[in-house]
Length: 271
Image (cartoon, rainbow, N blue to C red; front, top):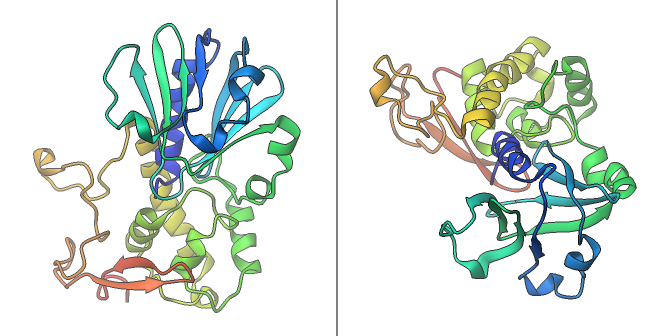
């Protein structure tokens, strides 16, 4: 699932291609939108802003309408130079916005809807989000801790970090990496996690996620030789059974929470 840093990165790229630009055409190839008349409703309009809120992306037009996108597991936004070959099949396109220089394409949905600005502001999926870990400005640590303490204190810490009502933007990769960098067992109950430990997790993840939002997905593990630091190399994520990069113990994995997302951790470093 694309996480907050990926969505913020997409919003930067899409915004650079669309904001203030003339829109030559808007197409909705996905059959479920065939009767929605988006091309007619948005004809002659310009995009005034593109922003990310956690894992949600909002494309705001100058007519008081907002395109709301959530990529869930497999969706993506791509920006191509006009005439450039798409890297996914056109049959997977849900939305195409064409300017004199670019084609902005949303592939594979699955959440793509046109809302009024008022509806977008009040939509509970957006209004209920916790502090955005990737957003510019100061991260509201007080609000984060407050929401964490209002949650079920028997809930595993790693599962609570995935709850977008506690903190917006963290997904399965950054959950595992943040817990490792903070030295906290992701299975520990919230009530047994000190405020300092919870803050250590978000403080470790936030600068890396912000860097990833600017540059694209980065490695969290940095070996001494930069040439070996291939993108996507992490401390624990997707490394079950392999030796911990810090202590050598085998990395463990277990499904966690109602969604059954796999969590990775080092039993020795995070004891």
